[in-house]
Image 1 (spheres, one colour):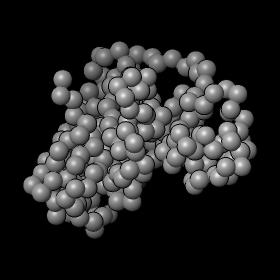
Image 2 (cartoon, helix red, strand yellow; image 1 turned 90 degrees about the vertical axis):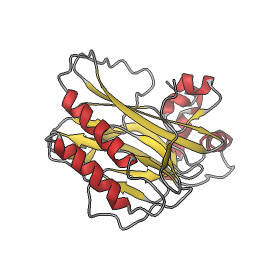
Image 3 (cartoon, rainbow, N blue to C red; image 1 turned 180 degrees about the vertical axis):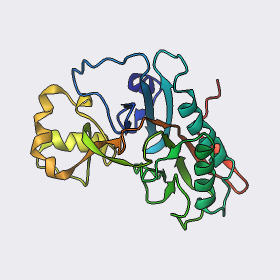
Length: 252
C-alpha cells in the first residue's frame, strides 16, 4: 500500500494501519514482522497520502477470507459514513453528522465507539483541531466552507469505548528537534509533524530514534474496552456551500 502511494507521486501521510478484531486503530507492522492474517479476521485498513503536506485519509474494513460472518459489523460503518456525508454542507452543525453516524450504527444493533472521532485536516496536520464525534451531544462546532474533514465512524459489538493497548510502532515529532544530530534532522525534514514508523527509517539510523524519544509522540494501539470487535470506514471530504466533495472516493 505504501509503495503504491509512492509510485503515484505522493507520500504516505502516516504508516498504514492494519488493526484487527478488537483493535480499533494504530497498529502498523514493525520491521521484520512475521504475523499472519487468518480467515475471519476483521481487518481495518486505514491509509493516508499527502503531496507537499496536503493530506487525504481513508479507511475500509474487510473480513479476511470473506464468508460474511461479520457482514453486519462492516455494513454498519459503511451506512454510517454515507449517512454522515449526506449531512455535510457549510453551516451545518457537526452534531448533525454525529446523529447520523449514531443512528445508522444503532439501526444495525451495534454501538458507535464514543471516544473516537473524525477530524479536520490542514497541511502537515492530520488532526487539526476540530473533531467529528461518532456520538451526538458532544460537539458544538459548525462546518465551514472550504474546510477539509475526515469522517470516521467506528462500530462495535462491545461496550462502545476504546482504551490504550500496547505500542503500535507509530511515532511523530512533537516539534523540530533542531540540527544538532544530522540523522534526526534528516528524519524531521522528511516527516515533519506527520506520523511515521521505524520501517521507513534505514536500519543504521534507527538507533537515533532512541536518542530523541522525549521529542516523539508515541501511538498506542486502541483496543475495544469490552473486548468487542470493531469496524471502521472513512472518507476525507471538502465542505462546499451546499454539500461535500468526497476526495477519497474511487473514480475507477
